[in-house]
Image 1 (cartoon, rainbow, N blue to C red):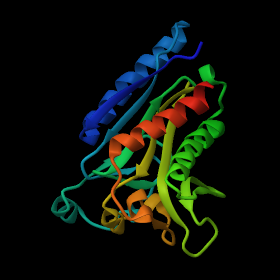
Image 2: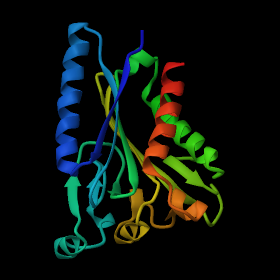
Image 3: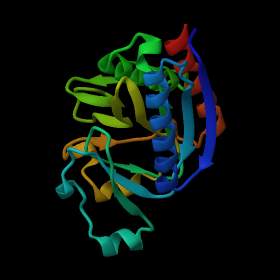
Length: 221
């Protein structure tokens, strides 16, 4: 029996959300080790302006100093996920699945593929054709073309089959904040959002509902 609950944290400072994730993650690791049933969870939220640098990321991909960061009203955190540097901020939907991958019969690559597929399906529901780029995680538009651009970044951590971190989906995101980094370490690829592609703002609750439906369908059904 697969158990999958959902939590909505609203707009939460990154440091607080990261701390809560760690608590959930550690509890899940202990639960799995004891042989008890894990309470798998999908967490949805937004963050104030923040940049996060993955464990193998390069500080050279952060293009501004601490003074400029403060002027931008942003923070920088070095964190324990895969991937390089990315941006989170208002209008961007973040999803943190805290899952026991064994419950869903998934390996790490299949799990990342599942996250990508859910976002691809949501994009399609808005008439935006999205897909994957070989050798790069996340969800992209016009893959392989000069106009190739990313609409969703993915960076996860998995220990003892338990996951944390997740995906960052640009819905109504202020894309100018990506100008201050090499997103995910790429210097030659653009970023976009649903708002930019469609030409109008989209209710965040609507996108949350659609993404939740797709994730549950892919994970449970």
